[in-house]
Length: 128
Image (cartoon, rainbow, N blue to C red):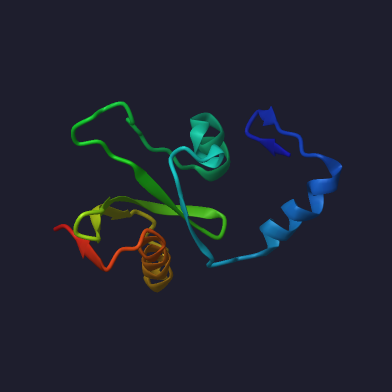
């Protein structure tokens, strides 16, 4: 596969997966952790998905842990969330959907509800 001036290689056993992804216009929503291997390599991420973000996980106060929103094979935005264990509230500190062509917000809301339920949240609160 050639992207710009660079060539990238894929194992022959995986070519059918690449073809399947190219033909599919999936609306499946995934929330991707900033530590996931998919988003850790910023150069790779920018080359293949035209997506980039900054992430600072060494700050103690005001730390952000943005969950990238992957819909099908494109990134549409991110969330910065926090679970308050004492009150069992799932806080959405920041929400950014930057892909103007994306309109399936219900899928994103369902993914967030699933994440909150996984952590045992009784309430989801979006900060304004």
